[in-house]
Length: 88
Image (cartoon, rainbow, N blue to C red; front, side, top):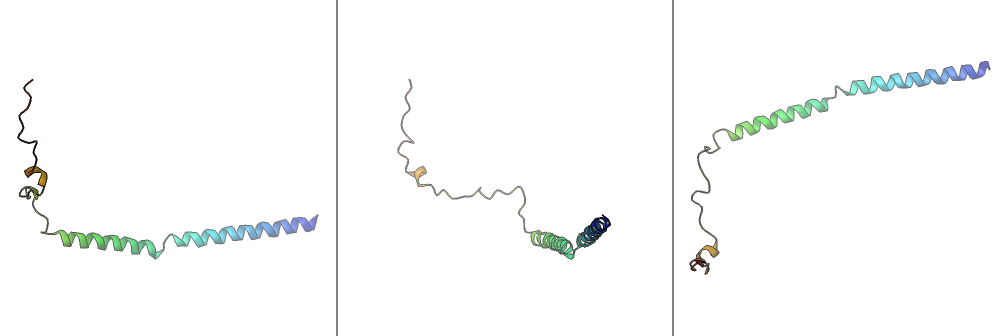
């Protein structure tokens, strides 16, 4: 009986040591430099976008489609356009 208790105590000690080591290993991973690199790249992308957009955007009041050419051939060749409508 004494042998079983000693074996169980050793197994429990090894299990606790493994759990504690795993906790220390993964708690140190939270402060990884990868997250800092991602944040820096996001900030860099925002800065590049801000610099690229300065003075380039047209004003809101301009309409890009205002002087659009009529490229629809059906508008000029529609035979039904000038037909009299039925008054009844």
